[in-house]
Image (cartoon, rainbow, N blue to C red):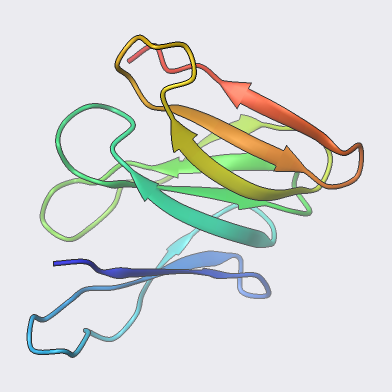
Length: 119
């Protein structure tokens, strides 16, 4: 069942609303992120079959990865530096090795950064 993730820009966290299954969702559970999360996506970046949360943080110029623990909760973020003012993030296999990589669009220098996955 698809859940909802929300980047809470002013609260410095990402919210997770779990799908209850009858068209409703649980109350938001907030997980701390770096400063000013701008966009979040879900993808299985460590290959364990569970969707992890990837969030770009506009003010702190980084991306956080919150690994899925498997019981509806997520670990504290692992943080990677990005270019200036990241605004968008996607996961895709850029180099064809079968692992999802992280692609970040940065607003200020109008550039894209790629984090190759070595998990």
